[in-house]
Image (cartoon, rainbow, N blue to C red; front, side):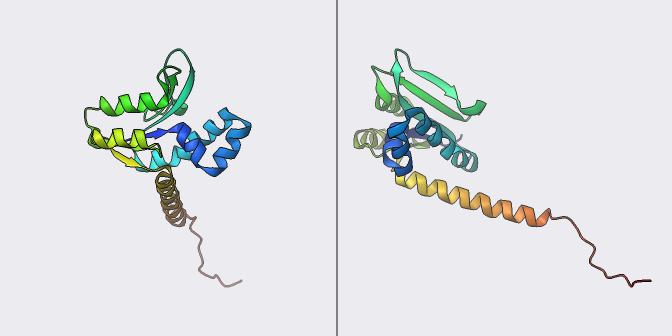
Length: 159
């Protein structure tokens, strides 16, 4: 069974400096930037990834990020809020030991700990993301070296 990483999207937007700046200008652009930023982490870790944002509508909605079945985006109902969605996910998890919740919100962190889930601060997730990107670059570099085109370097005398 895969690990499941749940990110408190609003908390991440306010914690990551470049996203916080974008958030002041355009909330949806900041959300899109966060979702793109997390793509390498989901791909490299091969985990289920769910990013939860506060919604503004009556119902909670779930979508797949660019059709990726392992990368979900949830917009909470205005009555429940993102925190409530995350807490409900943790409390109803069949295998909470497979969950990691990414947030700096102490109430959510305490809920996760209490129910057996792991917790990471947003800064730790960014470090893990950076490590995933570096590993991908190194791996890609090795592949490029192996796949380099063969060149015959045997000198032939001029006739």
